[in-house]
Image (cartoon, rainbow, N blue to C red; front, side, top):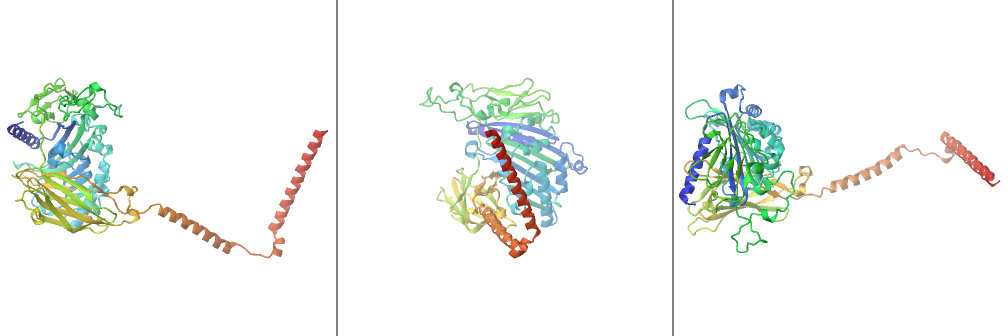
Length: 605
């Protein structure tokens, strides 16, 4: 594919999403499908609802979810961003992240918001109210975002909405993350309830927990922001709900009643016959999903139940389903659906009827000359891991690679570390590898600015923000050392030997020409801490209980037992009673023996 064709495709996509984002209607939804190598499919669901400021203040909710709107009003939250994510985005195979990483979160749950308050103490109180309310709404552990997991970023985030000049001085940005939080179906259900059609119609009818949480990577996001049109009309409050997932086509096509993968017959294997060793007994799988046949109902387990009746019926916003695939590839869609091919040759959309099910089938590739969908390579690759050994000290190492051969990359690197990782800032090092001779190689040239907020034991974690520059075709290794703290035994989780999750690092890439920044999240880390033997408290309890029982029994006997002389015992009433009982027992014994003797003599006669 030529560079001209690729640039034309990118420009068409920018215009497409710009027109989608600038629409002023009340509710829109769209599904974008994009094949990824080797045999994956990226599905991006986007739902957008609007509410005017006056109707929002008057509690007149129509498309905007009332449950979330009342929480934002009660907590004085002007802008909200919530993320539920699982898995790892394979940037080397899948290319650039969807939405430029702006609607992606780190592993687990991530939340940041702009809260209006006069002081920091008031902002913390409203942040606590917000996290507790969202925890109940989304069935998540957001109430565990306390002061030890909350930071105030300085350079990494900027408001995406429009805020008045009188409001900006009182806005407080707070950020929290729970990398340990498991995301599952109980989080998807309240997410769907916020939608006007609630998963009953439109593209939301394709969202199934079995498919979503079986994906290689998935992210659910909620963004609420105020938007003021340029024409001076009334401002609106906009909510964007997005679900992105990467599905394995072959795995998703397996029926739900067949959860155990079984070997496919030899005649159904998709092999590459161009290999020199290819034969009937040796199969090399194809490197892409280009040739594989699949359908919408096979991948998602069900066809789409028409379109949501609340969406626009005219214009580009009425095209609910779009697919990023070559226009030379044949697609068979359901009757009544209207296909629209965009310029560039790699983008087409479908307008769907309200009361009819929609499905399309992509057959096996008819020609080898059909080009595959181009991939956009990311501006930066990031890998983060632990270094060192032992239970006392360790280190963190991050590899930042710039694949471009002609332009450097400037970004902000943010880390939110738990308080039991005691960071040594003086050990911070930036080492340049694989660089040209003319590239800067010292630490001062790579690191432009540092914001460091040290941790306080059991009160707050460490916040580290670094503005950095990576030269072209170079790799920068960012590393520092830390010390592991010893926790109290009540602070360990039930599975203490598993380790403690450390939140992913957030990278904000600065883009030129006033374009919105791009974001990258690294993977989370698992930190092993010195763990005591939790069987010892049990042993201590058993030993202590035994000693206390022996000591208590001895002291109790000394205090209660009476010591009397032997001659006094004979006149006691209990002795007389015991003698009387013993006499009756002896008489009863003699009677039984006599009776047995008589019966024996009778038998002898």
